Length: 354
Image 1 (tube, rainbow, N blue to C red):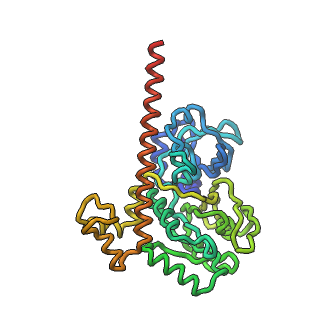
Image 2: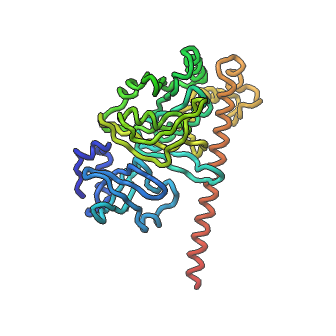
Image 3: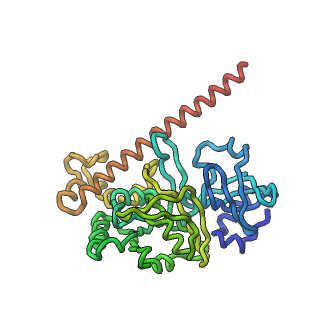
């Protein structure tokens, strides 16, 4: 398999992916990156440009979970069926990822993006600000080995004192992640974001609908790359993004836009929890009981820290809530997989007796 790494490096290719491609891609296949995902169809990109693509039936049959399907940012082995179409045969292992529990009652992973260096977690100062929600995003980023940066938008709609209060609230909540204050109206904060973005690195925007993600991309590209709609009188934006796509910027960085998320379900996120709530986990190591729930047990260091004013009650409550949610979803997912495998074995067994 021929890989023109000099050109593909502009899409983020490095030696790690080259080695994986050499192991997994067939000689007649080529390496490409998934740059658009929209309702089951894909656009893949390499040194020759962009083409529409589909996953082969063999690939689909071999997937055990929706998380195995190609997502934006993935590197894939493709066969070019014609000048303007390709088929996806293999998804290379992911260095990093962003995923959540699927919306609603379905217990399944939903991949958001893969092979991301930095996630810009975007919240509006005006109406969307919510520290527990920020903590959910931080758990998601940490679980997927993605560096988070918080972006507070619409700063032109609040006073300097109000902005300082919001930042203080984040810091008081135990969050030390870098914060960029941004106004798409005045341009404040844009240079800070541009300076952070490096050649060949991939960035992803996460946040609710209408917080200014699409406007930020248009500012970074210098043109109306993506459609936006007018905001309401309250300053709340209107949701426009309906697909996930990767955009290459002039300076060589890449940014992924994603649809706004109403739900951020936490699923199998023990590592992300450990990183995002390391202060609570450190305290819990000193609790009298190993299985302390930090609710009413004697000798609980978490409760003592709350009483001493060293830990916010809201942060402890959110930690407990996310932990229960993650463990419950993980248990339900394991049970679902167990039943699915049992059904498969039963079906095969039945066929043998025919």
